[in-house]
Image: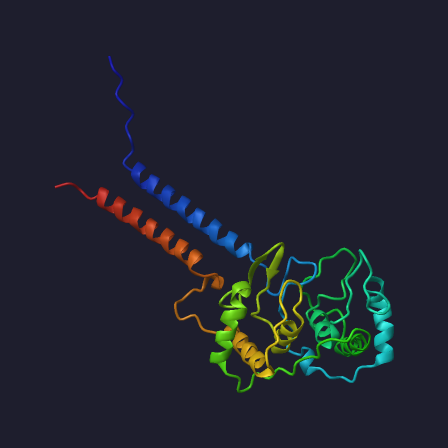
Length: 279
């Protein structure tokens, strides 16, 4: 006598549907969180030298001119910098690079973005809050400019700058690393171009004339630097008329989320049609 197959509960298809939707939702959430989590925090770089233009405080170097004290700058340099960069900024093999050619702009960039001085030896050079006061930073800028001459701090002014010119220059020269919306992205070789969404205009200018890390030096006229800085500032507050921007990561994550939602809705529709009573 053959055994009757086990009876399947009428709620089984519904349970399978719910389970399938839960799996799809979980996969989508993990993927989106992974994309978000894999991006550097604003202004951060995995490089020990700093990748490129990073975040800066509103009172960045171009807006602080507190009459630097050369004697105080020398004392502060010998206390916080000389062990790694040498007494005359020549660098110390295995400890720190030479500062020659950095000048005021390069010094302002690393100090106002908190990349230097390092909080302790062995800690990567990342974007942080500045560890020194504005007056201490200005003193160091003036002193390092004396022992390691280099680019001066560009007087960036975004008022009246041409946004259209800035947009085109940004797309041509910056978007490949920092992303079309300046949200940052991987450069390769262990470097990450940080987000510029909090970058001060002066910080953008300092990075362009010094080329920190793998970033090249851009020898643009000041009016073009103004235009790029103005466009970066525009991106910091640009609206998202399409709705949720998903961190501004582009069409790949947006397409994945849209596809996941579409598949989930299609499963719901299939189950609804399958459960309709037959005539």
